[in-house]
Image (cartoon, rainbow, N blue to C red; front, top):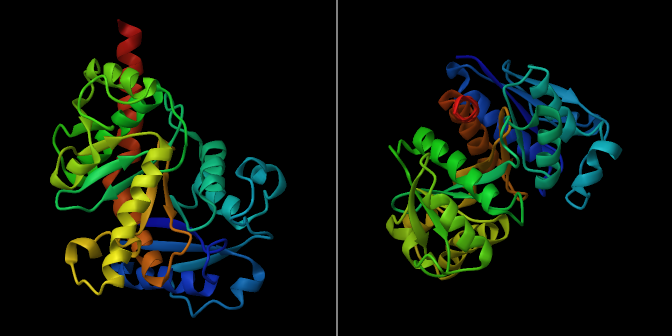
Amino acid sequence: MKITVAVDIMGGDNPPSELAKGAVDAANEFASQGLNLILVCTEDAKAQLPKLPENVSVETANSIVEMTDDPSVVMKEKKDSTLVTAVTLCKEGRADAVVSAGNTGALFTASSLIIRRIKGVRRAALASIIPVEKPYILLDCGANLDATPEILQLYARMGSIYAEVLLGRENPRVGLLNNGTEPHKGTALYQETYALLSQDENINFVGNCEGKSLPFGSCDVLVCDGFMGNVLLKLSESLRFIAKARKIDDEFLDNLNYEIKGGTPALGVNDVVIVGHGASTVLALRNMVHQTELSIKAGYAEDIRQAFAEEKTNTAEQ
């Protein structure tokens, strides 16, 4: 299966030449599996790239979306940026997916406006696989800081599909992150969401999940707003740094390394969009590209699209 991934190598914390090396490592390793890359960079960065294999090409753009740029104005002020160019390659069919370690908000905005969200999806979400002993899907982990009960219900449905496809979980258990297991716990948002998820026949809702139960397989999909999710994600990542500082060698904690995980998919857009850590290294880029390849082959975006199309048809027939 031939697949092409557009990789924006600008806008991250590390030099584009370093990110390009990680992408090239993946291109060399997975060339036999049909992987092709388009590195998107500025002309200045192009001159500093390492030697590229035959399955890697370059597309140039005039500007860079910086981490400090306001995502809401990127499409107006930086249409000629590497990030927008990478997303446009996907929209035009020249690429099957987009990878970037740049401005997360800008990538979400560009993807939503150019590739567009799947019909029926009001908001895309960042869905991270938390690699504990029995991994679970966490969403949203930072795309949208606020939410409504209906948005959290949407996350539960998309997360269930993703867990089935990527984790191989049959009828995945959906939990709602909260400060207690009882239905009345949490803010009004979470109480209303609990009631909504309890009535949803499209998911296997198992109730509220407390933080202390998450490492022990309490759910397959954990739903929360982006503020809570991002705090939980970064707390999980910090455990590895604590272990490293104390010189503790632990395989479980090593799995929490963002470089090993690669990136985080934006669920709800029409193609595969993978968001990387701003501090992504050579290893992180290699794993992001590999994760993207696996995601395309798994076809989760099409599964989500089909599920929402069937739901709309069923609703119309009732």
